[in-house]
Image (cartoon, rainbow, N blue to C red):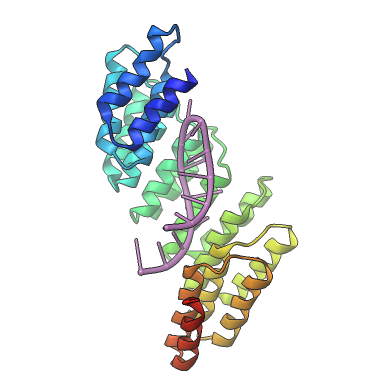
Length: 274
RNA sequence: CCUAUUUCAAUGCG
């Protein structure tokens, strides 16, 4: 079945609906069972390629062939509409799956929470977050990252911090992405010292900071007007063996320009061209 | 773009 799914996914990434479904169905002629996971995989491939409508079309084909959509199916579709910024459709699907006695799992809740955060409804996200707990679904690191990021972007860094600590108390191990989210949130609100402290903390735990980490730190220092430190942090990235990404240069040049240190900005810009 | 993935979700830049 593996081969047919892979072939179907290839067609999907090229946006070919008919061909992909045909490839998937072909497995039955070869004695394989065409199951829900196979359809889910194909739907996901269309979502990843940005074809939300075609993903939905496959979902309908699935229903017509008598297969019940499962939790994964709904998760993939909710993610599709989240990416398309159709928050109403995400919520609708969430309700729909429960009408069909399909149980939401931690991915379902995480996706919903992330969708709400990204559409500016952080309050709603917090409600859902509390909801999932009372329904016996434990948030994981993905869930926490979404809500921490959402709160940070909404300027509610203190709440974000609170949840970060709650996460640790729940026995979940913070990874690089959570740290990055919180550091970014702190940087936006000029709380660079707290951001720096977290940076050291993540390093001491053996986590490898990446270009996202450093971009957030440099950007935060720049916004706070602490340009020399921004320059030093940029060098720090080099010391950590972090690839000097364009976004990192961007953050530094931005900081220098804001501080009217244009000569230095040009100089850095010159390094970028090589 | 970057990243990631072979059934699903999280951080960056433009």
